[in-house]
Image 1 (cartoon, rainbow, N blue to C red):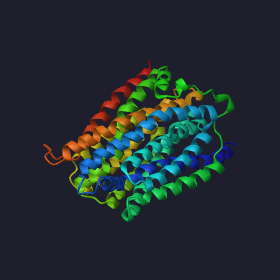
Image 2 (cartoon, one colour):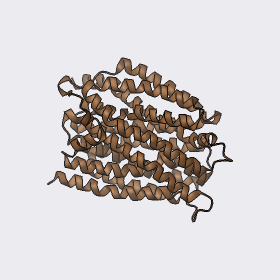
Image 3 (cartoon, helix red, strand yellow):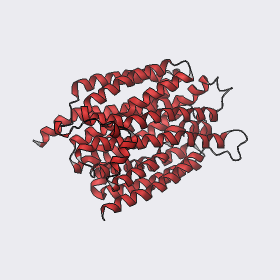
Image 4 (cartoon, rainbow, N blue to C red):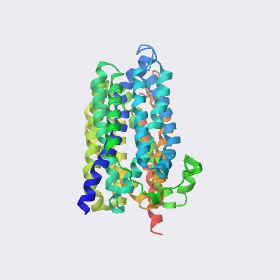
Length: 412
């Protein structure tokens, strides 16, 4: 009976895997070409420096993140009311249209509009994780959340690789490929994705719970989870330095081309996919979620500090194992929180996680891009392109404090 149930879940779980992968590909696709695209839209490399492109890229990323912050709890709560299937499929359709808009944009203003739309459609993480919580027993939730992390890692293999290769033919070409993938995934989901939310676990949609502040009030009912969400927020201030700064840092520090940038990001994706798709299923049962999360924090600080002071391209590749192993952290924390929340509020929890992550993503781009701008512009007191990574290491270390408080609260 158990084997039959597992077989019936493979198609839907594979769809969730593909959906998260394509979401991450959307980030990875644009990273290798974004410096060149922004410099083109700003008048060319002779008119705009890499620091100026990074500064505009920070504001562009922030606009994406604001939409995720506002809409993640809305989509999570809508999925608690209407089910996971319609929310996921509609978001995929919007995502497909958005990639086409980005591919055709003639101006920076329209690119901002496209990224705003992308921020709304990419808020599917809350519904995707709620789907996994619906179909997973408590003891397997952390491992299955690791599957979404693995999907993100695979997306970071394929997205940057595709963006780097296709980007050699022009900075707009990767977006057409992404639109085709989103359309194909929509068609796949239409046929294989069932509804995972049982009728008895559905609840009425309430506007007060479908916004970031309403979600915060609900989550405060569970103090251990509230502390862990605080850790998630601070940690993501650190973690989002990668999509915000990586391409500009690599171009400034190592003079890498879009292909070189895509290759490095693909290598990181391979490590993430291995750790969250396989290794976490070995590590968590053996060491437990708490020890796994603490190890993740430690390895993240090591990786970020190393990147801050790297002077040669090969050093980046030497640090990838540390960076990859830090990917143990997110699914371990997801499992800890999901097991402390009632079954009828899993969508709300995942909306809160996505919303806080998005709030971090709102704050990280202007902060990290301005640090990069300050330390790379001509006349800077010190030329230090790695400065944002050193700041990120500090945030990652700080996040360990509320995490430990949340864990100890459980024992009181």
